[in-house]
Length: 520
Ligand code: XMP
Image (cartoon, rainbow, N blue to C red):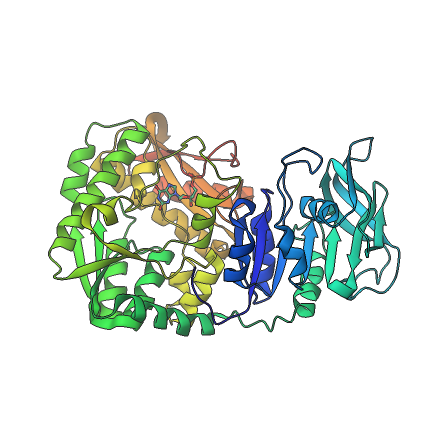
């Protein structure tokens, strides 16, 4: 565990689908927090973590089931402010001497309205000023008797104990989810809670930058670090942060696998080698990758080939760096939580994601992961703080396997060239219409099918392509972007007129799930 100079809030995760949203709401308040699954949190953990306050998340289990999850009992004797949400509220009640029951027509899912019972409660400052508050409920069980010392401050038709508290101990318990969008005034509740707990909002990117630089210097000493740079936001911010911390002890390796977008390699090289004056290896390995991919059409096979070659190439170049002991990676907090979360157990592999996993052990390298505590939007804020241009920071995500997964079926140089041109026109259209920043990710996929068309007086027999544009918060779920018909028509006309090799354009209106964002 990192020893921190900022105030820390602990979220004990009981497996709710929306636990990450609690963390986001808190980070928005400049409060540092970490999510830990309840199984990992015991008395010793609490002493070591030394939180200033604790939040108990929701969860899918029933408190009435024997052996169901609990918070460590000692938590309630530490004199810390505690906020229990949904399942967290129920276990809190039960552990403090109240009662929880199942069913009997009191389940509530979705929108509900809470009516105040007693007007004054510190955590409810700014609530109920216009009458009842809309909240989001999702519970089968309910509290039937509150714990000694608690009072009721709000009720809903199916949750007579929607808000209860023991203000003298700063214990608060709510049946609903204040972290979700559908509890419009929920952020206020968190704001009040952290203010009451004495947080000063000391989690800023400015403070983080200083602290991260000091931590990198302490970890690395006078050794060499290598960083795989893809040109994406995460690896770029990692590289710039490291460069600021250790200068020439850093070497970045940028692998050009021939699956990049139009002008991308030049852009990345100019940005890092010329602007930052970094030790930079531009590994042009197009022949290798495209050669190995020839004739391969299965999506997983393609991904595996790319992943393996990437490691081989990276290793080859890394071996040439004398005294390299560390490998820097742009791992983010959501990746860290997913690997330990209560709900993030073994799941079906939808796609083998490409990264440099496996490399550190193979090469005996130690990892430097300075973004491990950050969410994506915080990484962007840090990038701005570090002086990276906003146009670079705001770029749409681009996957490691690049255009390979936007070219279903066999990859050929011809198809890649057509795809690069079509993608450039599409992105140009999006920028011209001022839509780039409203869209999470947009790209063209070239389809493995030729169709018949007519241009001028002649027949064409060219490829069809699909345009994709989605809105998303984290890439886990996504919806298609609602372009106007005018925009789509104009874009299709431009692509077909300007890109030789494409004579038909479709728009992909699949959400995720059931689709995925990329085509492979
Ligand atoms: P999917 O297609 O799984 O994509 O809905 C979700 C997000 O992840 C990106 N993606 C990848 N990023 N390596 C990456 O670095 C990969 O192998 C990879 N596959 C998908 C995708 O572009 C989207 O933003």
